[in-house]
Length: 73
Image 1 (tube, one colour):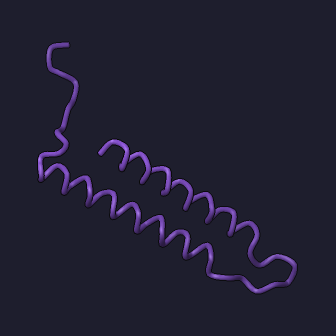
Image 2 (image 1 turned 30 degrees about the horizontal axis):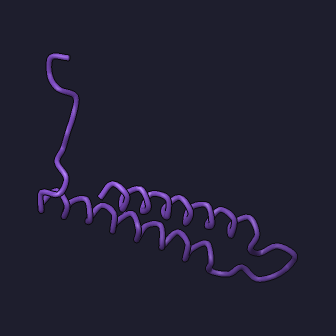
């Protein structure tokens, strides 16, 4: 499960970076803007929601357990 969460976070960052690249490159030199940036941001939001739902499902199924700082330390 740790690897799935790590991969999802990396994919979210890649989608965010690609949206930034599309924002800087689209619409230059008189060319019309494309919907690439919007699509990349929509993918990022979708991946974030999917990750959140997977974490909730994993907690509900008992695959992951919340841990925290033990009291008294």
